[in-house]
Length: 616
Image (cartoon, rainbow, N blue to C red; front, side):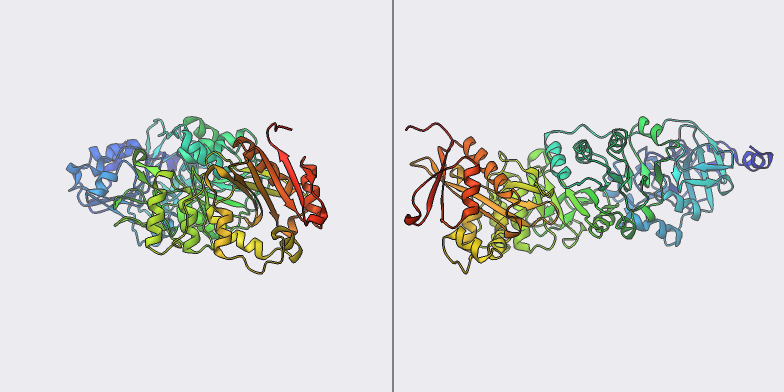
C-alpha cells in the first residue's frame, strides 16, 4: 500500500464504542443485509445507546440479532422493516416496528431519492485491497445505496468477509469509521428436502429446459428444485440470492452460463446466503458478480435473459390465481421482496417461465394453501394477472391467459385430495365452475413422462385432467375432416361440453386416458383413452392426434403409455374398431402387436391386444 493510502486509512480506525458515539438522536440508522449484518456494530449500538432517542433502524432481511426491537429499547429505537425476518417479526406484529411494502428492485431508488432518508449506515466489509477499496462481500443488494446516501458510514472490517466481483467495491474514502472486528459470518443452511418438497422440486424441474437462466431462493422447495436439475446442461443464473444449491450445480458443471443472453458466463446476484463453504467459494470467484438490487431485480433487466425461469414461494393462492406471500392469518409475516420483480421479468423473457411453488397444505397438514378466497387481511403480493404457473406436490397448474373457470379447475386439481370436494363446491357457489363440473381425476399413481419424438421435439405425456376440457375441445375442432371422420366414424360438426367432459373425466379404475402436450407451447397434441367393459375385462380404445403431429411417433408413445396403465390396472385386453380407409391407425395398431379380424364388408376392422394370457 502506498503511504498516501495509509494516511487516509489510519485516522478512520476506532473502536465500536467510539463509532457509536458519533450517532446522534433522531437519526435513521441503516443496517447491512442478510449474512453481512455487522453483528459487532449492532451489539455496540444497543450497548452504547444511552444517549440515543427516537432513532429509526431500517433494513431488509438480516440473519443476526435485533436487540433494538426489544420492548425495553422502545424509547431509543423504532424499526422500519423493508422485509420482515424472524428476528423482527414479533415487533412488527405487536406494533413496536413498522413495515414498508415495497419491491426489492425499488429500495435503492427509495434511499437514493431521500424519500427514505438514511443518516447512518452500519455495514460489514472486507479489508481494503492495495488500491484502497473494500468489498461489500456477500451483500450488495440495497447496501450500496445506503453507503452512497448516508452522511455517516461506519464499517466493520472483517477478514472473513469474502471479496466479491461486480458492483461491490467501495473506496475507503467513502467510509467515516473503520472498526477492525473479525467474526464468523452468519450462515443459513437449507433444510433437507422432504417427500413433499422433493415431489414439488421434480415437477418444477420439468419446466426448466437446457440453457435456462434461473432465479431461486433458499429453503426446502428451492433446494429440492436445484437438486432435481443435475441432468440439465448449460444453465445460467440471474437471481437476487445465491445459495449453496447454485454452488453445487456450478461445481457439477450444470451451471455454465454459456447460453445466457445477458452477461454470458456470469452468475449474477445481489446477495449470497448459505454456508461458510459458499462464502469461501464466491471469494474472488470471477464467475460470480454481485450488483445492487435495482439492477438484479429490475424486470426489464431480468427479461433480457432468454428462457428465464423464476421460482418463488407463496403462503396461499386463491382459485382466481391471487398469491398471498407476506401475510399469515391477516398478520404481516415477511414482505414483497423480489417475487413480483422476477415473476414479471420472467414473464417478459423470451421462453421465460414464472413459477409459484408451494406445498398443498400448511400447519402440519390441517390447512389448505389453495383456497377459494384469501382470508381477511391477506395481502396480494402477486396479482392474478401476473401468475403463470402454480406448482404443488400434486401437479402443475398453468393459469396465464386462462379464464376463472379454467383457473379454478386447474388449481383444484393440484390442491390436496382431502380438500378438493370443498373447493369444488365453493367454486360452484361462486359460479366459477359449471354445475356439472366433476371432481379431479386421480393422478398420483400415473406419473408424467417427458419424451422426445423422432423429429427432436419434446413432448409431455401425462394423465388427462378434467381441466383439459377446453384444450381438448379445441383439438377436436381443429382436426381435419378426414381425421375427424376416422375418429368418430362419420362427419361430426360439433363437440359440445357434455361430449368433451366425458372424454376428460375418468370413471374410477375403469378408465385410463393420457394426453400429449408440447413442452414449449403447452398445446394439447393428442389423447389416448381406454374404457373398460367390466363384464369382459376388455377396454375399448381410442387415439386422437392433431393432424400436424401425425407421423411423428406421437400415437405410438401415447398407445404405449396407455397399454402400461391398462396392464397395471388388470385389464384383460384392448380392442379398437377401425374404418377400412384409416390406414394410419391400422399400421399403428399392427406395429404395436394388435391382431386384426373382421371384413371390410362389415364396415370396420376389429383390432385386439391381449394384456394377459387368454383362453383359446
